[in-house]
Length: 492
Image (cartoon, rainbow, N blue to C red; front, side):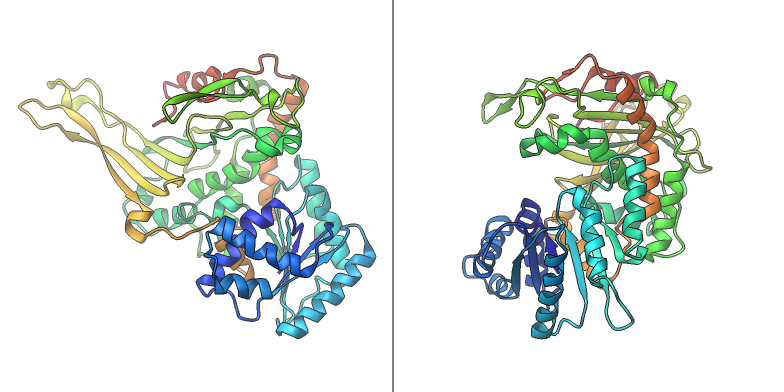
């Protein structure tokens, strides 16, 4: 595994801990080796100590850890410039040296844990050194982090440029959300249970909500985030992946392209938001100063414009809500409401399926004046699980209906395994399973969904920012988006 940007935060906090978790569960071959490549001047011994330290700090590895020692001893490092042909020639020699030492069989995967502007350049340099060539005896693959482009045109350009060097089956566009168990369980839940798939359509479902809420602000990412914004950062990748898995048709198999074919069809079936509809179907917000309860006292949270590396007059959105529709037979007339934002009251990622209400006519001679709709909630994080809310009679002489919940939590049934969300994805790349990675057409379809909104928001800068207090559920316009349809967000 060659890690470009090996001295950065992503490698330290996610990649090395994920490799540790794979190693301690015997999912790495004994011939496995790591080669770090970055601009920082670090000796190989210092890098090995960094590998050990990162695994202890971010994966909870014990001080006396044989897996840490093994991975550290299998780790190598070289200082290099992503634009230097000479450094990539040295990289080629270093890879050959490690292959001979550890008998890795010529199988290499490259992880681009770098700034997005280097993605195309690194792939080009690898191609020029013939480091992406594969045959029947060995493989070469490249994992590319998000963001994959900043709009539709840049995504197409990036696809075209890396496509000149790599085949599509060598490209693994990663989204760490898809490493979470409940995301993968969406397919099993839908297609392995005969009670849900027959009602997974417009006849029985009233609407779908997808929420990705974060309590944190932008932290140290202000420089990147102020240029990208919430819409670009979250919708085309994380949220539309959840969207497509929820709404896709049954694939003919669980082979990678069979699943991704159906995801792609759904993304292409999303009705584009017309420019004149953006004001009624899209909401943006930016958090101002707010307060949140913390250990018996109130903590003051700074406004987005006061965060480090953020323009004090920034017009960048930190909250987005959208109303989307799918133009196909299964979902015609069923709205999909999406919201995501920073500095919200609770950290949660969930998919809510609200079913149509049962007719009230049966209860016309009882005190029941309305029936609570059934809700199916798939919680992606932090407490992964699935709950089903339905009505039951409250004990007593009169017919009264109360809402009860059946709740399944992963930890209760299967225990808790330490995870960064990257373990499954790194392992899948090594075994050549691309099911949980985005394909070129999926990336471009995702940008097609957000492009009309981006265009309008660029042309009409927000005048009301900041428009929600940190620690609240976003601007009031997001609530109105649903109230106009007689619905409301789930906030439990």
